[in-house]
Amino acid sequence: MNNKSFLQNRFILSELVKKGIRLKYRRSYLGIVWSLLEPLLTMIVLTIVFGTLMGIDDISFPVYILAGRLFYGFFSQSTTAALKSIRANSAIIKKVYVPKVLYPLSAVIFNYIIFLISLIVLAAVSVALKVYPTIYLLQAFLPLIVLFLLSLGVGLVMSTVGVFFRDMEYLWNVVLMLIMYTSAIFYMPEKLLKSGWGFILKCNPLYCSIACFRDALFGRPMEMKLLLYAFLFSVAACIIGMIAFKKNEDKFILNI
Image (cartoon, rainbow, N blue to C red; front, side, top):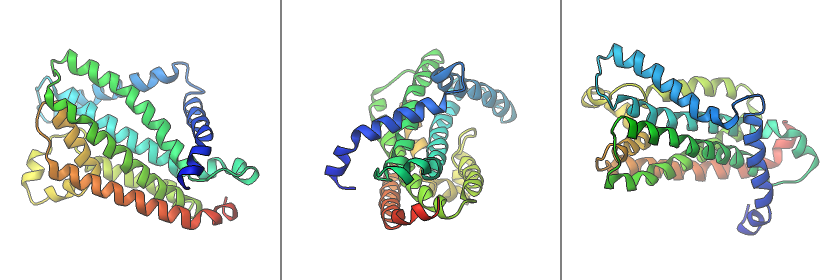
């Protein structure tokens, strides 16, 4: 989709984003408020369980967990929504011509909007637990951009594969579990990084973006090598995802 086509269809994209948000909360009494409560409740449970198991008494540990939980939650939800996006909109695709890339793109965007809103909870918890902003917080937008690009790139790949391989939805849930455990969401990675297995974390671009965001949040300079790796991986994923999507989009109609 070229720039002119994208501008012509920006209204459709905005409507798809609004539709995605409405559908996500259509059966919820709390609506979008749940996007604030759910990570907060999850943080409390994970803090109690893993804080007790690992003997962590750091008052800022809930902030550490919540930051990782929000990043992983967005990545998981956006890529899963993108994976399902073509099949979920098959009725519209068969009747009306709309650039098909808008469907996975809107899936990532509406989840990103919800994710940004949920950062309000992180800000509130940080202040409550005396994790105050420093000058390093200004760097936080960098891992946020990387996270969006990573989710979009992976989402485009998943949306393409998902059309032809219906079991991908179930396999992706398993892969997401592996990604979660290698993202250091609820455990401190220091010991693992010092061991011979530390490369597993550093090969995970989601962990790299989470680690950099945590650095900004806790007032530390980012490890730029991790950020650069995550950025390059995300850009490569976007390029590969777009090429794969464009190459196969004309075949979608035969498989949905």
